[in-house]
Length: 458
Image (tube, one colour):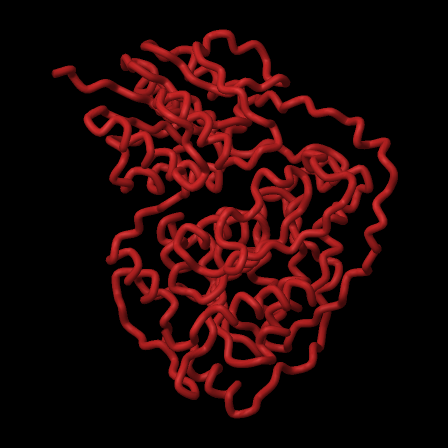
């Protein structure tokens, strides 16, 4: 009987990338049931992976490069040393778009075979023993399936086999329901059913696009997205710029619609403890109000649909019936969420969870909602993983690598296909029109279709 082997998986990608890789972890566990499978990921994402039943442990990759004190330096050194000081039988680098620091970790680790992709534009990475050939434009799940096939050495693994799964426990799902079943919503939703309609705006939010320093340090859409997370020098991939000379698209230029704010302010407040299950679902005419999770943030400005559009979207959805809105995002989204709350004042009850939940808690909250709508972010991938209908506003920077991978009848995508797609978010027009010119009415219709697939009152 052979002794168990050690397998190390390095994934330094974003939160959405890591979520998509969870299905591949399940397949690896099925093929190596007795082996020790470790995962190294960004330190802020460890809590997403550690509870999964398919991993033996999770090690953090340091990302707090902005801290320069001696304690922070020692802490980063210890994190890296904790990863590379062990011997592994297989080392799998799972991120297709990787930076120099992640490559350095894989190069420094000792052990058996090292696996990565065959990336033509990547720098010299000769220390990998197995280079998996994949289509650069293939969906991320197809890339993970090809990588797992090479590691396992058996028959081909398809996309369905690596379908992501967060394995939320019943307790986590109950906590998610407890977070959205808030008694504070009852009064406003009951007033809505008694005939109160959204008030006319008394101000304007037009002109503020939600592109704060947290999203893009330059605000110049003709430049590549600013690297985030590591802060250490990262090697950006060199992409073909021949698309800059293609003829202009026939996409119509649509001026932004003006969206107003009420004269009051809806405070997001501190949400009830996730450990308490207090509060009952609102019963209105045999059902309850629709629960809609909104992910209005974006990792960088080029993916941002615009905060005014989200306000207009929610206001139009609220006209058809009582609505409970949950705003989800990180600490960097608090400013834009404040603008959304002001824009919805007096017509829609809003709960703001920006920076208050872990990724798994956010996924549990999405699982308790009837619909999730937003930019191409972690929340939309989480909605598919937990089975909540979703609508994603999709741009063309890396289309179709990140398009929704769930049932198209439940997970809809609103996209304007243009001849300049695959620009890697370097907009030759300077206005990122593939995202910004998507009309509010298109997204409203997709949301109504999504809500139509849900039986209210469940």
